[in-house]
Amino acid sequence: MPECDYCEESFDGEDAYLAHLEDAHQGELGPIDSRRIGGDEGDGGLPTGQLAVAGVAVGVVALLGGVLLLSVGGSGSEIGPAGSAHYHGTIQMSVLGDRVDFTQEQYQLRDDRFHFEGDGRWHAHATGVTLDYGMETLGIGVTGSSVRFQGTNYTEADGYEISVTVNDEAVSTDYVLQDGDTVQIVVAER
Image (cartoon, rainbow, N blue to C red; front, side):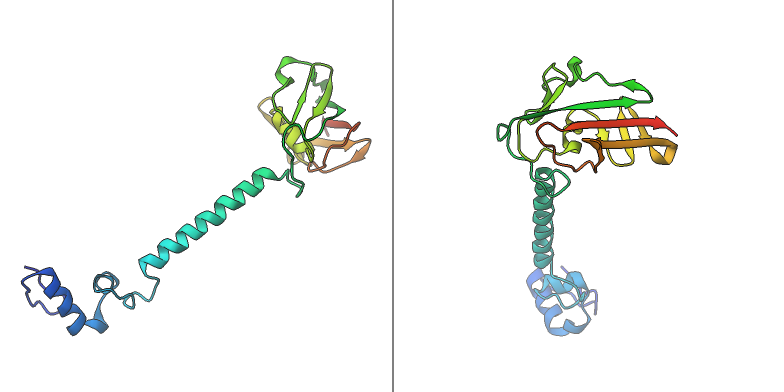
């Protein structure tokens, strides 16, 4: 037998108890009891149905945002599908005076859109390939102030000088690569 928490009256069943709550205690119900009788005014907040809809809406927005970020190469430039282009260039990279050899097996054919093919030249097989995208496919993270290479993060804040140029001009790493570009990435001690 349910007992009323507000006036301690007893009832024969749940339906009679809920009818009593609605009739005798409408203005003093807490959020749970208010929902039990079909209202939502007790907590001043959203009813659970609206919370569920809001949660789904937030989830959809987050999912769409994630898909958009994956399809954008950091600069607002969409990277096209593999096979949508075919162009080449060179990358020269040195870390503390040691030149990175991009003819090594570890840099060959790792991605359908950007890779090396043994000849020391980079190959882009998609439109909109950015420098940061290309380097990430090789396992190398490059920003304007840091380079992550072989498990070490070299940053300007830690006393390293980072230089990223394309055709002898400084660029940000969201630069969209063009046919014939010569990229130079240098990590040096200050």
